[in-house]
Length: 233
Ligand code: CA
Image 1 (tube, rainbow, N blue to C red):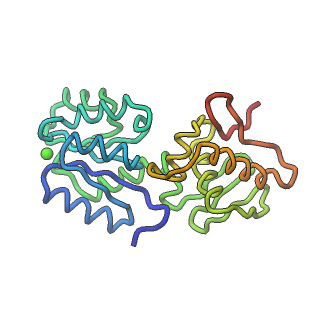
Image 2 (tube, rainbow, N blue to C red):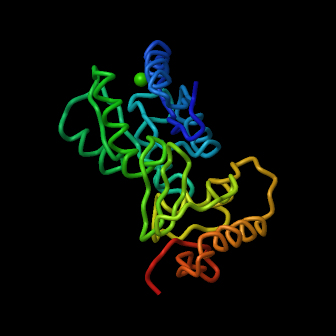
C-alpha cells in the first residue's frame, strides 16, 4: 500500500538483482518506486516523474551516473531533486568528483540498505516533509500532513483537494517562486491536460480560504514569474 502523499524515489541501477532488492526495501518503507536501468532512461524517467529523490548508481552502461547527475542538475525541472550516488569505488578523488557534479550525498558499495533509507529520510525531511508525515508550518498557517488538516491562527480551514496540494507545495518551500508551469507539474502532474489559467484559478481559491478571517495575504504574485508563499512585502 502506497500512501497518497508517498514520496517517489527513482532508482537507477543496471544490476537487476540490486535494483529489485532496493525496490523491495523502499516499497516496504512506503515509498513509491520508479526505476531506470541506464543513464538515458534515467534522464527520461526523472523528467517524466519528477521524483522526490534519486538513488543513482555511478557505474552504468553508456551514460555514466556522473553524466546523468550533471544533466539533471543543470536542467530546470530536475535541478532541485536530491541525488544520492552509489559508487563501488572508494577513492577520495572520485567521491569529491561525485559531489562536484551536484550529487547531494553518496554511499560506497557495499552499503547497508538501512543506512541508505536513513539517508533518504534525512534528505526528504528538508525537501519533502509532507511525504514523511510531518507537520508543516509557515507563519500562522500549519498543515498536519498525516490528518490532512490545515489551520490558520489555530482555526481549521476547509480546502479542496487541489488547494490542499497547492498549499503543501508552497509550504514545503516557503519563499521559493514557483512558475505556473512548475505548479501545474507538481499539483496536476506532468501529463495533465490543464490550462495555465487553471493554476491562477486555484491559487485564487486558496488565497480566498487562507485570508477568509481577514488575515494577511501570504501568497505573493510575482509578475512574469509566478507565485510564492512569502511574508515579506
Ligand atoms: Ca552498476
